[in-house]
Length: 290
Image (cartoon, rainbow, N blue to C red; front, side):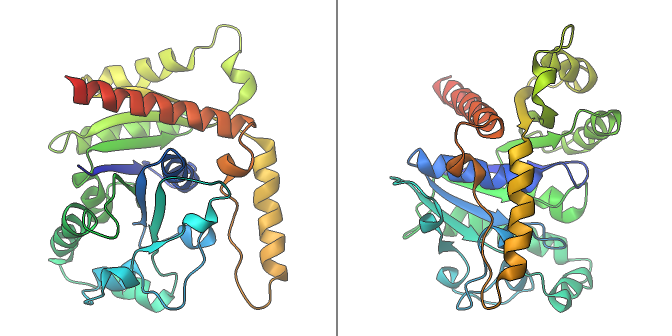
């Protein structure tokens, strides 16, 4: 049965999208069939990793109500993975065209409900069929508590909340999850992102205890847990800057950002995100065994 993960945050700038890309890619490397969807229709990001295929369509058009064959919307990007894999990685991109984004914002009051029906049909009915036969769907959501982001959480069994270790994020995450868990109550992992490595060994500092005290304890929900730490990696920042310069040089076609955990598996960011994924998969196995 397909498992759906919504990667979410209470505000932008937490590194949500890069975690979604790397989690989806690592799952494919492990042999799973994975679909990664860019559900941040207002500010999509994944086209910087997987440049648009001009023969394909976008999720933006799909949620505007167009009848699009699924093979023109969700396509195989496994060749982006620089490793031999047994699984598959498929992607559905959203449009960065201003006119289409404006149309999304200008729809009527029934649009969020229609979007939810279309998303449920896509994730639970269509993607389980050939040629996708997915094991995991990873949703890169829009941040906050918009109706669009709540729809993404509503179809997900698992929720990854990405936050930085700052008071605004800690408090904002609590308030966000109070709203979500009033009715939806997905299995929720809290991930601390962009943490300098030295703080993992800083005397007297325990990140898990801090998150449990500041976020998890006030919520008092048995299915919210500490999901781990993703390390701030200076080399990752250098790679992102290099990507900007390389994309400026490209006259004819877009290039994609590197999937960092696959190209640089031994660096801090990669090692920490692998640990996060392993802990999550172990949790899933334990729940299925009960």
